[in-house]
Length: 440
Image (cartoon, rainbow, N blue to C red; front, side):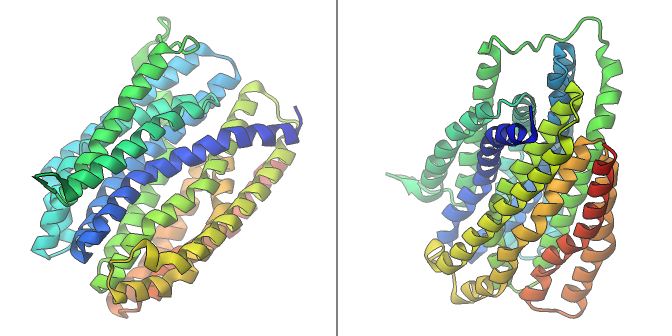
Protein backbone atom coordinates (compact mmCIF):
# COMPACT_ATOMS: atom_id res chain seq x y z
CA UNK A 1 0.00 0.00 0.00
CA UNK A 2 1.48 3.40 -1.01
CA UNK A 3 1.36 6.63 0.99
CA UNK A 4 -1.71 7.92 -0.89
CA UNK A 5 -3.66 4.82 0.10
CA UNK A 6 -2.58 5.27 3.72
CA UNK A 7 -3.75 8.90 3.64
CA UNK A 8 -7.18 7.83 2.34
CA UNK A 9 -7.41 5.21 5.05
CA UNK A 10 -6.36 7.85 7.56
CA UNK A 11 -9.27 10.06 6.48
CA UNK A 12 -11.67 7.14 7.00
CA UNK A 13 -10.33 6.79 10.54
CA UNK A 14 -10.00 10.52 11.28
CA UNK A 15 -13.47 11.84 10.54
CA UNK A 16 -15.26 9.70 13.14
CA UNK A 17 -12.45 10.56 15.57
CA UNK A 18 -13.08 14.25 14.90
CA UNK A 19 -16.79 13.97 15.59
CA UNK A 20 -16.08 11.78 18.61
CA UNK A 21 -13.80 14.47 20.03
CA UNK A 22 -16.31 17.18 19.15
CA UNK A 23 -19.06 15.32 20.94
CA UNK A 24 -16.81 14.80 23.99
CA UNK A 25 -16.61 18.58 24.19
CA UNK A 26 -20.34 18.85 23.53
CA UNK A 27 -21.16 18.02 27.15
CA UNK A 28 -19.49 21.20 28.38
CA UNK A 29 -20.57 23.21 25.32
CA UNK A 30 -24.22 22.26 25.77
CA UNK A 31 -24.11 23.05 29.47
CA UNK A 32 -22.48 26.44 28.82
CA UNK A 33 -24.92 27.38 26.05
CA UNK A 34 -27.98 26.41 28.09
CA UNK A 35 -26.75 28.10 31.27
CA UNK A 36 -25.72 31.34 29.47
CA UNK A 37 -29.26 32.89 29.58
CA UNK A 38 -29.25 32.56 33.39
CA UNK A 39 -26.68 35.36 33.67
CA UNK A 40 -22.99 36.05 34.24
CA UNK A 41 -22.77 34.47 37.72
CA UNK A 42 -23.96 30.95 36.67
CA UNK A 43 -21.68 31.11 33.59
CA UNK A 44 -18.70 32.03 35.76
CA UNK A 45 -19.58 29.16 38.12
CA UNK A 46 -19.68 26.82 35.12
CA UNK A 47 -16.29 28.14 34.07
CA UNK A 48 -14.75 27.25 37.43
CA UNK A 49 -16.47 23.88 37.80
CA UNK A 50 -15.89 22.68 34.24
CA UNK A 51 -12.22 23.65 34.47
CA UNK A 52 -11.81 21.18 37.33
CA UNK A 53 -13.96 18.43 35.79
CA UNK A 54 -12.46 18.86 32.32
CA UNK A 55 -8.99 18.40 33.80
CA UNK A 56 -9.92 14.95 35.16
CA UNK A 57 -11.73 13.94 31.97
CA UNK A 58 -8.74 15.12 29.94
CA UNK A 59 -6.38 12.89 31.92
CA UNK A 60 -8.66 9.90 31.28
CA UNK A 61 -8.72 10.71 27.57
CA UNK A 62 -4.91 10.90 27.64
CA UNK A 63 -4.69 7.43 29.17
CA UNK A 64 -7.08 6.30 26.45
CA UNK A 65 -4.77 7.76 23.81
CA UNK A 66 -1.92 5.67 25.21
CA UNK A 67 -4.08 2.55 25.14
CA UNK A 68 -5.04 3.45 21.58
CA UNK A 69 -1.44 3.19 20.37
CA UNK A 70 -0.94 -0.15 22.16
CA UNK A 71 -4.11 -1.51 20.57
CA UNK A 72 -3.01 -0.20 17.16
CA UNK A 73 0.33 -1.97 17.42
CA UNK A 74 -1.31 -5.24 18.55
CA UNK A 75 -3.92 -4.98 15.80
CA UNK A 76 -1.25 -4.31 13.18
CA UNK A 77 0.63 -7.46 14.20
CA UNK A 78 -2.67 -9.43 14.38
CA UNK A 79 -2.00 -10.44 18.00
CA UNK A 80 -5.35 -11.10 19.73
CA UNK A 81 -3.71 -11.82 23.08
CA UNK A 82 -2.00 -8.41 23.09
CA UNK A 83 -5.34 -6.78 22.22
CA UNK A 84 -7.02 -8.31 25.28
CA UNK A 85 -4.06 -7.43 27.52
CA UNK A 86 -4.11 -3.81 26.32
CA UNK A 87 -7.86 -3.55 26.98
CA UNK A 88 -7.90 -4.99 30.50
CA UNK A 89 -4.68 -3.32 31.61
CA UNK A 90 -5.90 0.02 30.31
CA UNK A 91 -9.27 -0.47 32.01
CA UNK A 92 -7.62 -1.12 35.38
CA UNK A 93 -5.33 1.91 35.03
CA UNK A 94 -8.11 4.28 33.94
CA UNK A 95 -10.72 3.07 36.44
CA UNK A 96 -8.17 3.30 39.26
CA UNK A 97 -7.32 6.85 38.21
CA UNK A 98 -11.01 7.81 38.16
CA UNK A 99 -11.58 6.58 41.72
CA UNK A 100 -8.57 8.54 42.96
CA UNK A 101 -10.05 11.74 41.51
CA UNK A 102 -13.56 10.87 42.69
CA UNK A 103 -12.10 10.65 46.21
CA UNK A 104 -10.28 13.98 45.78
CA UNK A 105 -13.37 15.77 44.42
CA UNK A 106 -15.53 14.34 47.21
CA UNK A 107 -13.23 15.53 49.99
CA UNK A 108 -11.59 18.67 48.62
CA UNK A 109 -13.68 20.17 45.79
CA UNK A 110 -14.91 22.92 48.15
CA UNK A 111 -11.32 23.86 48.96
CA UNK A 112 -10.38 23.84 45.26
CA UNK A 113 -13.23 26.18 44.39
CA UNK A 114 -12.45 28.43 47.37
CA UNK A 115 -8.87 28.69 46.13
CA UNK A 116 -10.17 29.99 42.78
CA UNK A 117 -12.80 32.44 44.04
CA UNK A 118 -13.78 34.08 47.32
CA UNK A 119 -17.30 34.93 46.07
CA UNK A 120 -19.59 32.74 48.23
CA UNK A 121 -22.50 32.69 45.76
CA UNK A 122 -20.20 31.82 42.87
CA UNK A 123 -18.48 29.09 44.91
CA UNK A 124 -21.81 27.56 45.95
CA UNK A 125 -23.00 27.25 42.33
CA UNK A 126 -19.69 25.73 41.24
CA UNK A 127 -19.74 23.21 44.10
CA UNK A 128 -23.32 22.20 43.28
CA UNK A 129 -22.26 21.39 39.71
CA UNK A 130 -19.16 19.43 40.77
CA UNK A 131 -21.09 17.42 43.39
CA UNK A 132 -23.03 15.79 40.55
CA UNK A 133 -20.57 15.74 37.64
CA UNK A 134 -17.82 14.11 39.75
CA UNK A 135 -19.54 10.75 39.05
CA UNK A 136 -19.07 11.32 35.33
CA UNK A 137 -15.32 10.76 35.75
CA UNK A 138 -15.88 7.10 36.76
CA UNK A 139 -18.23 6.35 33.88
CA UNK A 140 -16.01 8.17 31.38
CA UNK A 141 -12.99 6.09 32.48
CA UNK A 142 -14.79 3.01 31.14
CA UNK A 143 -16.08 4.64 27.95
CA UNK A 144 -12.64 6.06 27.09
CA UNK A 145 -11.04 2.62 27.26
CA UNK A 146 -13.78 1.24 25.01
CA UNK A 147 -13.27 4.18 22.65
CA UNK A 148 -9.50 3.58 22.56
CA UNK A 149 -10.02 -0.13 21.91
CA UNK A 150 -12.27 0.57 18.92
CA UNK A 151 -10.15 3.43 17.55
CA UNK A 152 -6.92 1.46 17.79
CA UNK A 153 -8.41 -1.16 15.49
CA UNK A 154 -9.56 1.49 13.02
CA UNK A 155 -13.21 1.07 14.01
CA UNK A 156 -13.87 4.66 15.07
CA UNK A 157 -17.52 4.58 13.96
CA UNK A 158 -18.62 2.62 17.05
CA UNK A 159 -17.65 5.43 19.48
CA UNK A 160 -19.30 7.91 17.12
CA UNK A 161 -22.60 6.02 17.39
CA UNK A 162 -22.33 6.15 21.17
CA UNK A 163 -21.92 9.90 21.14
CA UNK A 164 -24.84 10.28 18.76
CA UNK A 165 -26.96 8.72 21.48
CA UNK A 166 -25.49 10.90 24.21
CA UNK A 167 -25.74 14.27 22.43
CA UNK A 168 -29.54 14.62 21.97
CA UNK A 169 -30.22 13.10 25.40
CA UNK A 170 -27.81 15.56 27.01
CA UNK A 171 -29.28 18.55 25.17
CA UNK A 172 -32.94 17.72 25.87
CA UNK A 173 -32.52 16.63 29.49
CA UNK A 174 -30.27 19.55 30.36
CA UNK A 175 -32.67 22.06 28.79
CA UNK A 176 -35.69 20.85 30.75
CA UNK A 177 -33.79 20.28 33.98
CA UNK A 178 -32.18 23.73 33.84
CA UNK A 179 -35.33 25.67 32.95
CA UNK A 180 -38.05 23.41 34.35
CA UNK A 181 -41.14 22.03 32.66
CA UNK A 182 -44.87 22.01 33.39
CA UNK A 183 -45.19 22.48 37.16
CA UNK A 184 -41.60 21.43 37.91
CA UNK A 185 -39.16 24.20 38.79
CA UNK A 186 -35.84 24.35 36.94
CA UNK A 187 -32.67 23.28 38.75
CA UNK A 188 -30.38 25.83 37.06
CA UNK A 189 -26.72 24.83 37.02
CA UNK A 190 -27.50 21.54 38.80
CA UNK A 191 -29.91 20.63 35.98
CA UNK A 192 -27.06 20.87 33.47
CA UNK A 193 -24.99 18.49 35.60
CA UNK A 194 -27.78 15.89 35.89
CA UNK A 195 -28.45 16.00 32.15
CA UNK A 196 -24.79 15.32 31.37
CA UNK A 197 -24.51 12.51 33.93
CA UNK A 198 -27.53 10.61 32.61
CA UNK A 199 -26.40 11.01 28.99
CA UNK A 200 -22.88 9.73 29.72
CA UNK A 201 -24.35 6.73 31.56
CA UNK A 202 -26.42 5.81 28.49
CA UNK A 203 -23.27 5.96 26.34
CA UNK A 204 -21.55 3.53 28.72
CA UNK A 205 -24.45 1.09 28.36
CA UNK A 206 -24.17 1.35 24.58
CA UNK A 207 -20.45 0.52 24.66
CA UNK A 208 -21.02 -2.51 26.88
CA UNK A 209 -23.68 -3.92 24.57
CA UNK A 210 -21.73 -3.07 21.39
CA UNK A 211 -18.56 -4.89 22.48
CA UNK A 212 -20.44 -7.80 24.02
CA UNK A 213 -22.51 -8.51 20.88
CA UNK A 214 -19.68 -8.02 18.33
CA UNK A 215 -18.54 -11.46 17.15
CA UNK A 216 -15.20 -10.00 15.97
CA UNK A 217 -14.31 -8.78 19.46
CA UNK A 218 -12.77 -11.27 21.88
CA UNK A 219 -11.91 -9.71 25.23
CA UNK A 220 -11.10 -13.02 26.93
CA UNK A 221 -7.89 -12.54 28.85
CA UNK A 222 -5.15 -15.01 27.73
CA UNK A 223 -4.57 -17.70 30.39
CA UNK A 224 -0.82 -17.82 29.79
CA UNK A 225 -0.31 -14.11 30.58
CA UNK A 226 -0.10 -13.17 34.28
CA UNK A 227 -2.19 -10.02 34.67
CA UNK A 228 -0.08 -8.55 37.47
CA UNK A 229 3.09 -8.88 35.41
CA UNK A 230 1.49 -7.16 32.41
CA UNK A 231 0.44 -3.98 34.23
CA UNK A 232 4.00 -2.63 34.56
CA UNK A 233 4.98 -2.80 30.85
CA UNK A 234 1.57 -1.46 29.78
CA UNK A 235 1.80 1.37 32.31
CA UNK A 236 5.29 2.35 31.10
CA UNK A 237 3.89 2.69 27.58
CA UNK A 238 0.87 4.70 28.68
CA UNK A 239 2.54 6.83 31.38
CA UNK A 240 4.48 9.33 29.18
CA UNK A 241 1.35 10.09 27.13
CA UNK A 242 -0.81 10.48 30.24
CA UNK A 243 1.91 12.55 31.95
CA UNK A 244 2.13 14.77 28.88
CA UNK A 245 -1.59 15.46 28.99
CA UNK A 246 -1.41 15.89 32.77
CA UNK A 247 1.19 18.61 32.33
CA UNK A 248 -0.86 20.36 29.64
CA UNK A 249 -4.12 19.99 31.59
CA UNK A 250 -2.66 21.36 34.79
CA UNK A 251 -1.21 24.17 32.69
CA UNK A 252 -4.63 24.89 31.18
CA UNK A 253 -6.09 24.91 34.69
CA UNK A 254 -3.44 27.37 35.86
CA UNK A 255 -4.25 29.58 32.86
CA UNK A 256 -7.90 29.51 33.93
CA UNK A 257 -6.94 30.38 37.50
CA UNK A 258 -4.94 33.34 36.23
CA UNK A 259 -7.77 34.42 33.91
CA UNK A 260 -10.12 34.26 36.91
CA UNK A 261 -8.10 37.12 38.40
CA UNK A 262 -9.22 39.38 35.54
CA UNK A 263 -12.47 41.31 35.84
CA UNK A 264 -15.70 39.27 35.78
CA UNK A 265 -16.63 40.21 32.19
CA UNK A 266 -13.21 39.17 30.85
CA UNK A 267 -13.34 35.84 32.68
CA UNK A 268 -16.86 35.17 31.44
CA UNK A 269 -15.75 35.95 27.87
CA UNK A 270 -12.92 33.42 28.09
CA UNK A 271 -15.28 30.88 29.68
CA UNK A 272 -17.73 31.29 26.80
CA UNK A 273 -15.11 30.98 24.04
CA UNK A 274 -13.02 28.14 25.50
CA UNK A 275 -15.50 25.34 24.63
CA UNK A 276 -15.52 26.57 21.00
CA UNK A 277 -11.73 26.69 20.89
CA UNK A 278 -11.48 23.17 22.31
CA UNK A 279 -14.14 21.91 19.89
CA UNK A 280 -12.57 23.53 16.82
CA UNK A 281 -9.09 22.24 17.50
CA UNK A 282 -10.47 18.69 17.79
CA UNK A 283 -10.51 18.30 13.99
CA UNK A 284 -6.74 18.76 13.54
CA UNK A 285 -6.29 16.76 16.76
CA UNK A 286 -8.34 13.89 15.34
CA UNK A 287 -6.26 13.87 12.17
CA UNK A 288 -3.09 13.82 14.28
CA UNK A 289 -4.44 10.94 16.40
CA UNK A 290 -5.45 8.99 13.31
CA UNK A 291 -1.94 9.50 11.95
CA UNK A 292 -0.46 8.15 15.18
CA UNK A 293 -2.73 5.09 15.06
CA UNK A 294 -1.85 4.43 11.41
CA UNK A 295 1.88 4.74 12.15
CA UNK A 296 1.50 2.34 15.11
CA UNK A 297 -0.27 -0.18 12.89
CA UNK A 298 2.42 0.17 10.21
CA UNK A 299 5.14 -0.41 12.79
CA UNK A 300 3.24 -3.47 14.04
CA UNK A 301 3.12 -4.76 10.47
CA UNK A 302 6.80 -3.77 10.02
CA UNK A 303 5.90 -1.74 6.92
CA UNK A 304 8.05 1.41 6.92
CA UNK A 305 8.89 1.89 3.22
CA UNK A 306 6.28 4.62 2.65
CA UNK A 307 6.36 6.06 6.16
CA UNK A 308 8.35 9.21 5.29
CA UNK A 309 5.97 10.22 2.48
CA UNK A 310 2.99 9.39 4.69
CA UNK A 311 4.27 11.63 7.51
CA UNK A 312 4.88 14.53 5.10
CA UNK A 313 1.38 14.31 3.67
CA UNK A 314 -0.16 13.97 7.14
CA UNK A 315 1.50 17.22 8.18
CA UNK A 316 0.21 19.09 5.11
CA UNK A 317 -3.34 17.82 5.60
CA UNK A 318 -3.26 18.79 9.28
CA UNK A 319 -2.20 22.34 8.44
CA UNK A 320 -4.91 22.62 5.77
CA UNK A 321 -7.55 21.55 8.30
CA UNK A 322 -6.30 24.18 10.75
CA UNK A 323 -6.73 26.96 8.18
CA UNK A 324 -10.34 25.85 7.61
CA UNK A 325 -11.00 25.89 11.38
CA UNK A 326 -9.50 29.38 11.63
CA UNK A 327 -11.94 30.52 8.93
CA UNK A 328 -14.84 29.06 10.89
CA UNK A 329 -13.63 30.84 14.03
CA UNK A 330 -13.63 34.11 12.07
CA UNK A 331 -17.27 33.50 11.13
CA UNK A 332 -18.02 32.71 14.80
CA UNK A 333 -16.44 36.01 15.88
CA UNK A 334 -18.80 37.88 13.55
CA UNK A 335 -21.85 36.04 14.86
CA UNK A 336 -21.00 35.99 18.57
CA UNK A 337 -23.76 38.45 19.55
CA UNK A 338 -26.35 36.09 18.02
CA UNK A 339 -24.80 33.01 19.63
CA UNK A 340 -24.88 34.66 23.07
CA UNK A 341 -27.61 37.33 22.82
CA UNK A 342 -28.19 37.65 26.58
CA UNK A 343 -24.67 38.50 27.75
CA UNK A 344 -23.66 41.96 28.94
CA UNK A 345 -22.13 44.51 26.48
CA UNK A 346 -18.84 44.42 28.45
CA UNK A 347 -18.60 40.66 27.88
CA UNK A 348 -19.26 41.12 24.14
CA UNK A 349 -16.49 43.71 24.00
CA UNK A 350 -14.06 41.34 25.71
CA UNK A 351 -14.94 38.60 23.17
CA UNK A 352 -14.22 41.02 20.31
CA UNK A 353 -10.82 41.94 21.82
CA UNK A 354 -9.57 38.32 21.92
CA UNK A 355 -11.11 37.31 18.57
CA UNK A 356 -7.82 37.65 16.55
CA UNK A 357 -6.07 35.41 19.08
CA UNK A 358 -8.52 32.51 19.09
CA UNK A 359 -8.86 32.75 15.28
CA UNK A 360 -5.10 32.30 14.72
CA UNK A 361 -4.62 29.71 17.50
CA UNK A 362 -5.63 26.57 15.50
CA UNK A 363 -3.09 27.34 12.77
CA UNK A 364 -0.25 27.76 15.26
CA UNK A 365 -1.25 24.69 17.27
CA UNK A 366 -1.88 22.26 14.39
CA UNK A 367 1.75 21.60 13.45
CA UNK A 368 2.70 20.89 17.06
CA UNK A 369 -0.23 18.51 17.46
CA UNK A 370 0.59 16.49 14.35
CA UNK A 371 4.33 16.40 15.11
CA UNK A 372 3.69 15.37 18.72
CA UNK A 373 1.47 12.44 17.75
CA UNK A 374 3.95 11.29 15.13
CA UNK A 375 6.80 11.34 17.65
CA UNK A 376 4.69 9.42 20.20
CA UNK A 377 3.83 6.74 17.64
CA UNK A 378 7.55 6.40 16.89
CA UNK A 379 8.22 5.78 20.59
CA UNK A 380 9.39 9.27 21.64
CA UNK A 381 6.66 10.17 24.12
CA UNK A 382 9.18 11.35 26.73
CA UNK A 383 10.65 13.86 24.28
CA UNK A 384 7.18 15.30 23.56
CA UNK A 385 6.62 15.57 27.33
CA UNK A 386 9.85 17.55 27.78
CA UNK A 387 8.98 20.00 25.00
CA UNK A 388 5.55 20.71 26.47
CA UNK A 389 6.86 21.01 30.02
CA UNK A 390 9.67 23.44 29.23
CA UNK A 391 7.68 25.75 26.95
CA UNK A 392 4.62 25.85 29.17
CA UNK A 393 5.88 25.63 32.76
CA UNK A 394 9.32 27.19 32.45
CA UNK A 395 8.35 30.05 30.12
CA UNK A 396 4.69 30.74 29.27
CA UNK A 397 2.92 30.28 32.62
CA UNK A 398 5.45 32.31 34.66
CA UNK A 399 5.26 35.14 32.13
CA UNK A 400 1.44 35.03 32.15
CA UNK A 401 1.41 35.10 35.98
CA UNK A 402 3.66 38.17 36.05
CA UNK A 403 1.56 39.94 33.42
CA UNK A 404 -1.77 39.25 35.17
CA UNK A 405 -0.83 39.46 38.85
CA UNK A 406 1.86 42.15 38.79
CA UNK A 407 1.25 44.29 35.70
CA UNK A 408 -2.54 43.69 35.66
CA UNK A 409 -2.62 43.59 31.85
CA UNK A 410 -5.78 43.54 29.75
CA UNK A 411 -7.56 40.38 28.58
CA UNK A 412 -5.77 40.58 25.20
CA UNK A 413 -2.24 40.20 26.59
CA UNK A 414 -3.28 37.60 29.15
CA UNK A 415 -4.98 35.41 26.52
CA UNK A 416 -2.12 36.02 24.04
CA UNK A 417 0.19 33.81 26.12
CA UNK A 418 -1.61 30.71 24.81
CA UNK A 419 -0.72 31.23 21.10
CA UNK A 420 2.74 32.50 22.14
CA UNK A 421 3.31 29.19 23.95
CA UNK A 422 2.41 27.27 20.79
CA UNK A 423 4.87 29.36 18.76
CA UNK A 424 7.65 28.44 21.19
CA UNK A 425 6.92 24.73 20.69
CA UNK A 426 7.09 24.85 16.90
CA UNK A 427 10.91 25.06 16.69
CA UNK A 428 11.75 21.90 18.72
CA UNK A 429 8.86 19.93 17.19
CA UNK A 430 10.02 20.80 13.67
CA UNK A 431 13.61 19.85 14.46
CA UNK A 432 12.96 16.52 16.21
CA UNK A 433 10.23 15.33 13.86
CA UNK A 434 12.50 15.76 10.84
CA UNK A 435 15.44 14.16 12.69
CA UNK A 436 13.57 10.99 13.62
CA UNK A 437 11.83 10.65 10.27
CA UNK A 438 15.16 10.89 8.44
CA UNK A 439 16.35 7.82 10.39
CA UNK A 440 13.56 5.57 9.10
